[in-house]
Image (cartoon, rainbow over all chains, first blue to last red; front, side, top):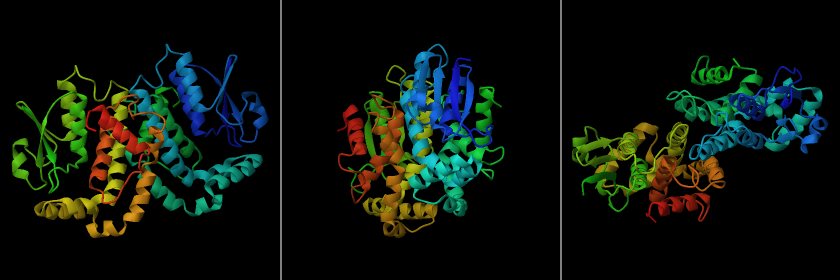
Length: 222
Length: 222
């Protein structure tokens, strides 16, 4: 297949947890674009050196190489204009930007405080060393401290999820009757966390679990 | 004039601070609809009894009476379809719903914790009694306690404002190159707080102050 996506994997390569890779997997499905996903580990920098940088997602689309999830989403929107739009026209597209920013500055940190120690446990030994060094450097905190404060972090996460739950109690998707890239972004965040979490994060059959299932069903992933 | 808006006022009737009334004042300006605003105080329930409920905003548009800001916004969108849309078409309209929910469940409480005691000081004596009773009942906390914890509340507010600041550093308005109801909702929240706050809430000439000025300039309110 001529379309490849390098996708972050755990030691068990069936576990794919990157929120940014999930965005792109949904965006590709939204655009009806088949692709082969290639499991990739944090420390396999050499495998994606051809992209000129060291992080995934990396999309290889025939002779094009694109890295960075936002750049990939914009590439897909421009390159495949006859498929359903990822963002919608203005004012939809700038409104998606607020949801993206909220996800990255509020939701991701709230989820990270609950699951960072869980992620570490799932990685290859090489990746564990890399993950501990980079995450402890970023958060100025030992991974073991996150595990100790999991109860408070879970309470804070539930508070953070409130506007999301309230919105999805009133409409099927963030983008209305069908998902768009706003849903992909937030789904990616929650999928990342529920995939790696050692305890259930979302209420069983609650509004968020039902929304995640509906997103997966929309794209034939369920 | 045949279009009247009942608008919450302080003891000094030039002080208009309701976030929900501000939404509607901007929505009316967005639709190019002139109106006369009537100052109203919390305890003047008799003055708006004709609306069948006891809160503002209440819009009287010729022979129509509409209360509740969301109902008024939807009424304006349907009744004046030839003016600029308040919400945009789907997927813009459902995306606005997330921003509305975030504003009401996250931003409003964060602002309230800073300014509730300030609001009390500005009200008529009758309204002060009503305000203390309803707000202390809702928050399970004395107004004086909010004043004592103002420093922590201000720090929490700055953290809450982060996704808003980050978004508006990258685009002129939440809705893109021009404001829509998403901007009106968030502007209403900040206008409420800066109008009543006893100390400056926003960084002088920072991104949020510049955005608020740009919203006001768009509608000739500056």
